[in-house]
Image (cartoon, rainbow, N blue to C red):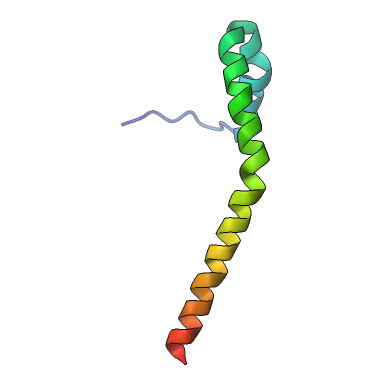
Length: 66
């Protein structure tokens, strides 16, 4: 079982890895920054794919009813 930290917000995690990590481990901070930047650049594509999938399920459900 994993322990959960109460009241941990995503924004604080991003702040930790983007601003505070550089003072602790610069090499790791650079690698993490690359991953965060890549995810940020791709998130609109993932959102579009999710919307497309949502409406394709709706369209196939309507065909089955007819």
